[in-house]
Each structure stands twice: as C-alpha cells, then as structure tokens.
Image 1: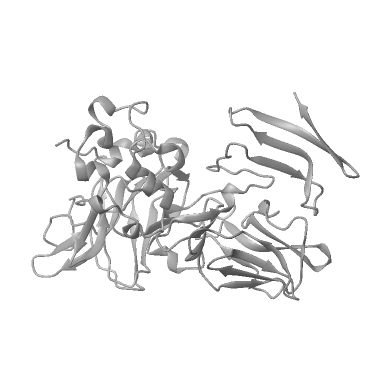
Image 2: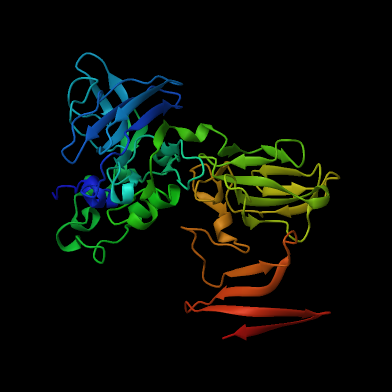
Length: 429
C-alpha cells in the first residue's frame, strides 16, 4: 500500500516558509463551534515550529476559544468528533495521544484540515482547507481585522458525509461520521500523486476528488489543486468555524426577501458578497449579487435587468421553481427555473457564486452558470456561453456588445445592432 502523501508537503503553503520578514505580528485563531454536537479542536505545528500553548481542547455547542500563534508559525487545525473519556480517543480526527492534548501528534484520517503559514512571501499569510486526508466536519476560515483589504475566506461548509461514496464512508453505529480521501482509502499512486503520478501533469483529479470539489469548490480536493484552493492575507487574525452553514449564508426553502423593507440581502459567510435587492433610482430594485465591502458595491451578476422590481417586490426560495421574484401584485418578474431535482437549500458562497442545492448539497442551479456582464476569479465561462455589456449605469438590459465562447475555445466579441425589428451581429476581429 502506498503511503499517503502529507497534504502540507503538497500545498503552496510551504513555498513561503523560508521567505519570512522580521518584525511581523503574531496571529490569533478563534475556534468557534456552531455544530449541534461537541467538537474537540486540535493543532499541529509543522516546519520545525514549537507547539502552540494548547494542542487540543473541547468546544461544546456555541462555545469558542482563542489560540495565539507566533509570527512565523506554520501548522494545521482540525476538529475531532465522537471522543470518549478514560483512555481518550475519538472516532474521527484522533491523534493517538490518549489525551485531549495532542502534544505534537497529527490527525488520523479522515479529518477536514485547516492549514496555515504565517508571514511568508511578501509578508502574506497562506491558508487553505484541505480534504485530501478526507472529511469529518464542515469548516470555514474567515480573516478578521482586515478592513479595507481584500482577504477572502475559504472552507468547506457542505456536509460531505451526505454525498460520500459508499466505498469511502466511515460509519459508527450505522451512521456516516466521516468520508475518506481516495488516497487513504485505496493507497494507489494515481490517487496519492506519488511514484509515476507525482507531477501536476501526471496527477489529475479523480472521480472521487471531483465529488469533493463540486460540494466544496474552495477546498483542496487533490494534491495539485493549488490554483483555486490557496488563499492569502496579511496582518490578520482568523476565525475557524465548525459547521458554519448555520449562519445567514445558508438559506432554507421558504425564505424570502422584500424589496425596501430593510431585509434586502443575503450575505456570504465572510460578508464579502451579498445577494438580494440592489436599490436603483426611483425606488426600483435589481435582483443582483455584489461586492458588499467596497465603496461602490460593484455588481457582478443580475437577474431582472429588463424588468426592474418596484418597492415591495418579493423574492422567495421555492423547492421546485427555485428563486422566484414577484412584484407587489404577485405577478412573476423572474425565476431561476424548474429543476429536475427538489431544491433543499440555497447558499451564498464567498467566491461570489449563489447556488441552489438538493438534499445531498449538490448544486442544481448556480449564478456562475448564468453570467451577465462580469466574470470573477474562479468563475469559468461555459462553452457557447455569453457575456453581454449593459446599456447604462442603471440600465442592466443587454447592451451592444456580446462576448461569446465558441465550442472550439475561441472567444469572439460581437457588436449587436438593433434597428426596429432587425438584429444583426457583427464579429469584431
């Protein structure tokens, strides 16, 4: 059996280990348990760093605890579950110490890992959430104290146990309590990215890692998943939240927004993105997604550009019709559309993507698949997809320019001219 390759040796975090600067600050990590069960957080220092002041403790539901790390610290945090007293051990995430404190021992897979490297290249912190060693608890990492700077959060807020393939499931008394990574489960070279599969060109995402990536697009799903999974910030503290989806980022069927009544948006976990009613002149509203924490609140997606919503319009999350926007008289202005699966919830992600999810937390509709005039980092334009300019600052109807991605991969900018009922498309070369 091939020995699993350790995640922290594979990620971009270690690129920064030797590029630190003197005189930088320590960081505080506040671990918060929003789960409806007890979690036993643990930490492991890597790269020759000394252990933190605590390497393991208990957090009951609703509790939090703060740990301070020195300026050049590198390491990881994770949550242990279903732990027993006496000779202390845990069903998931156990470190084998026989105590609540891990004392320098790492986690036994499966475990959702938070990996941190403080004050690396250019004074930046590098951090990620990794599922390479499997999954046992939903986690989000949120930079705090970063007003005026662009620092994105990351994590895996979904319940991967609900979509875990049978051959990867870890069960306890008939309940799924964890989901193994393919490397740990099978030990094959192409899953572990070792041997003949030890380079980015020879180690590709597997069917298993794609399941993880679909459910948690910001988390590491395989060894060379760096481009969409490593995040940076500087001079920040961090909140590490277990079971984050209980906050406003996660929506239930039946949830509503009313234009103009003070409850006009749903925020992502970090508060970076908002989905809801964006106010236009003359008490009209645009259903949109925008950057919440910058002065101009730039819009990145909109729904009803051709039919603005008056004050009192209602947006509802429906289990079969998806998002439904109606005016105060009840007439439908826009909807995301029927789906082949029943909608269970909605989620405003920290990458700017609003998703409708089924009972297995798999996407059935997402705003990234229906772009309007903007693409954001991590968003992929689909073949035969279009981007349209808008007609004006407050007129979000499709404008005179269309960007089209052909099936052969070529991108063409078209000039669309409307003369009465005649429409022609001119390709600009």
